[in-house]
Image 1 (tube, rainbow, N blue to C red):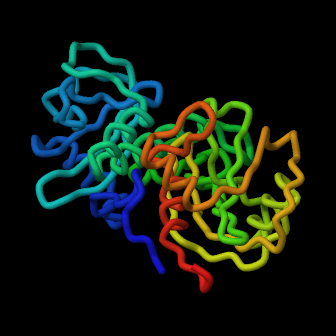
Image 2 (tube, helix red, strand yellow):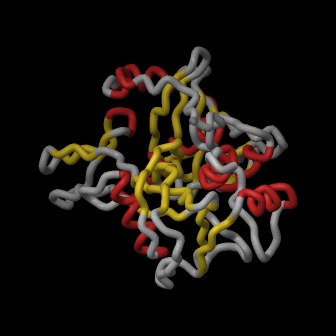
Length: 305
């Protein structure tokens, strides 16, 4: 069974137009068109309209005076507009407020679903990657942005570098009709969430799930079923959501990883979703894939139900 509701930060709304990325002349022409939209970022925050629309401020070529010495990423096109993500030093006044993407995503999730967070996330992730990779990792020389922002090139050693994302497994562990949730020391009071961890080099998704669950809780996992994924721009991860079948229910917490872990029944999960939770027990917000996995778990059926 596949739970079809989309995660916030998914459903990128543009044609990425890969064929245009290597055409510097075509991109230069696109940037001069009055229909082209520029999304402005500063310190990882996006310039948003100061109303309740949930829309970014769309700059055009006439607003180009507001930034200098910045970087530009070509995001793609739809039938009406081409889109670029830009950052730099502002030199003029622009209406709007800079908001972090968590706040933008939280507001979007409260109102159902929006593709705006996905559009902004791609811009933020790419700009952030360039900010952290200004020098060639092979020879140490400064590198340059090419191909619309999807490659950095080192003239010194003729090496290309490509943006990367960090794959993370996040798992709803099931045993005896209950699900396993844990809490880390930095969580809000009462917050429990799905276990998660980065995939290590050379691991499969299934191997990473089994290793992480065992390291954090001492529980061994058998079958692993992929459910859905979510881009996570903090700074640049891909959350790979799965259901994992535990082979036993005995929890042995690794205190270096978790503060606590417990098994929860469907009735407990349904109750906290109804009342919003408290400092004793609450679950992740709608913007997180962990919430989607919880709701998927509620839809699962067992033979003894």
